[in-house]
Length: 68
Image 1 (cartoon, rainbow, N blue to C red):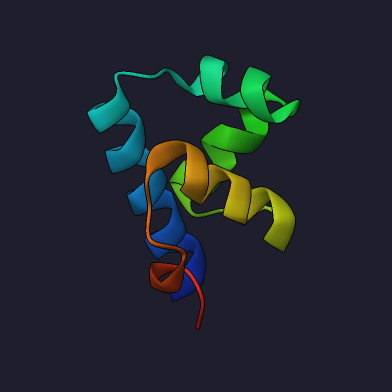
Image 2 (image 1 turned 90 degrees about the vertical axis):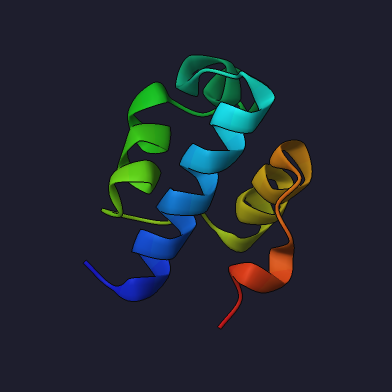
């Protein structure tokens, strides 16, 4: 597990909590699987850049926080 995946997962989890949104809802909005969102949060993987930027926009995350 690398730092970028861990950081992204933490930001996604906090963003979901602030929005009152579930992992399933985020997955549906992004047209991806619930397991992908779970893997992002667990720090096992990151989405591609376009999806990561969409996540940032949806969850009000500053994209500069996820870019190395």
